[in-house]
Amino acid sequence: MSSFSKSPWVIHYDASSCNGCDIEVLACLTPGFDVERLGVINTGNPKHADIFLVTGAVNEQCREVIRNIYDQMPHPKVVVAVGACASSGGIFADCYNVAGGVDSVIPVDVYVPGCAARPEAIIDAVVQAVAILERKRKEMDAETVSKEVA
Image 1: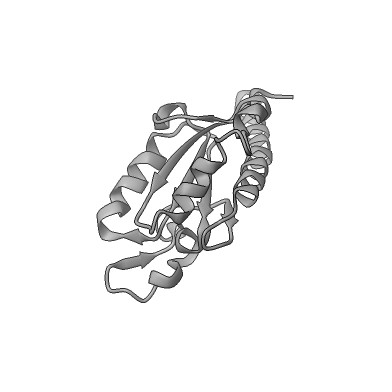
Image 2 (image 1 turned 90 degrees about the vertical axis):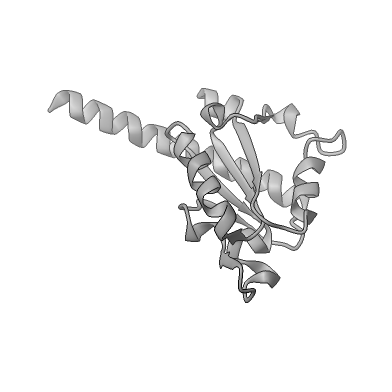
């Protein structure tokens, strides 16, 4: 078992939302759900994060912030779009200031449905993200070995 499956570090960013999904992300840390018992650590530094949780729809003001956080994260990394707004723009999709979901700026690996997304669904998405991290790590290792052999 690699270090990712033991202790994935998560960074959370609220693009522009009603804060419903943000509250549910925070609920995952409370004693009722206690995601930290699974080894998940919430960090504020993208350079330490493995998983990028984004809530809210993307607008022009936050587009560059999302890109900057993503670019600062080390490889491999996984992006999770939490809720309908982060997935597609949600109920705000037709607003003049909304550019869409997170996948309009960066690649998304896991989508969490809901408005607001349930804590159980968010935790399930983090578990899926850990599996994707494992796969990406193995692919990176295989590429490194093939480059060394060549």
